[in-house]
Amino acid sequence: MMSKIDDLAGVLYVKFQQEFPLAEGRGTAKTIKNMSNKNVEQRLHQYYKDAAEVRRKHGLWVIGWARVVMKLQQQLLQAGYPPEAVSKLLLAMIFSSHKAG
Image (tube, rainbow, N blue to C red; front, side, top):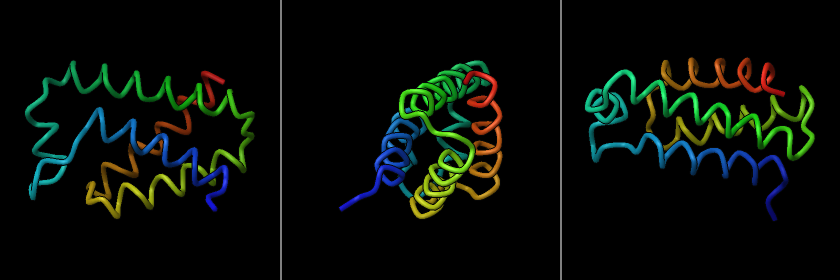
């Protein structure tokens, strides 16, 4: 049975995959290179808004949200997303959801 933390990290993982799918055998860097900078920024901005909404909807405070973010990090790294990009994404996600929430 999955916990609430696992469920929410899974929801955010699926949303991220939809916005930034991994190219077969090439990783996210190749996928993102094929997008314009403006398109990437728009997608990230929307993703951060969605993440903030998930946090608000489920009433997650700092510790609960940190647990979701850590679980999401594990899932993204296991899927093959570049570690540096994942770290930057999650740091920005924490700050943007905090400001929005």
